[in-house]
Length: 350
Ligand code: PMP
Picture 1 (tube, helix red, strand yellow):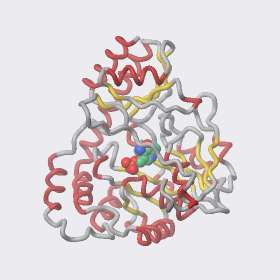
Picture 2 (cartoon, rainbow, N blue to C red; picture 1 turned 90 degrees about the vertical axis):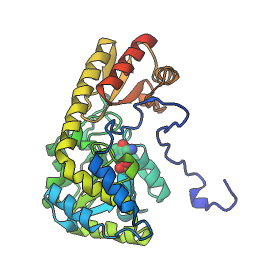
Picture 3 (cartoon, rainbow, N blue to C red; picture 1 turned 120 degrees about the vertical axis):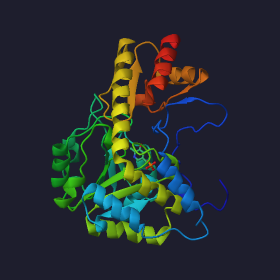
Picture 4 (cartoon, protein in one colour; picture 1 turned 180 degrees about the vertical axis):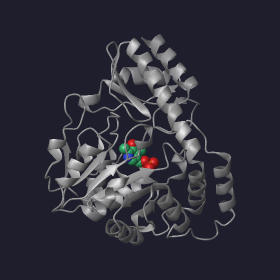
């Protein structure tokens, strides 16, 4: 720490992103990326946009906003486009939390939520998941806090039903409820339609998972026009050109491939069920994941040891050191070939 760092950040512990190793080629199952490369039309669109990099990108992201609105059956005014969904989440902490209105999320969830709270000086409450890692929605009724729920949750992959989400929305009329749908395309139900009914709902989504664009950094939020206006106030007060022109073009082209995206998701779901069954056969306990990853605990080997032994053998998964989940590893679902390597390597280790 330099002597210049503001005292408000002296105790800040930053988020630890998953490893992106450059030393060797791993079977990379640690950061929930898509194993499928972007389609050719997406690559071509990004290349074509590179020719205009001397100009700023469109701060209104007009074309992409319009296409997202069409894709999700909402109006343009209901959409904000951001640099990954991390950015719209951070904007939500900035816009809808302060010293009087704290933030709440499950204690086991996306590790960035408490960091966003800390960097914005917001008190954060981690609400314990039940013993089986499911969310007890009664914990979220009538909280005077801005609520962040990943659906499906990460790293457990467990999803809430829309009925459960509605109950939380109804019981928090004066609080924003953010439903983080980073993984929704792999088997959960989207809450987007509920924005017509609930003015306290913000749904966040990303191009990083089902749409194969993690490196492009593209996310978006869907909510009432008033919420979107608030988020845009933050956006225009921090970084109006928050999405670069190559990514805007790539995102737009990606939305021409919705059928392919859906097929890729089906493949991932199939590979997830295949891998889950194989690991169960090897004595693993798994949560009921509706995401592009599984969360698994062996009865023979600890989470950290398994992570390290897999890494030694060229397979990268994610291990979290927090006490309740230290026995688990989170394994991103890749191609069938990648999953066969994972299963074989686990067998050898055991
Ligand atoms: N929400 C959850 C639950 C995530 O796991 C991630 C990915 N790390 C994100 C949001 C953010 O993803 P991105 O910024 O790539 O859209």
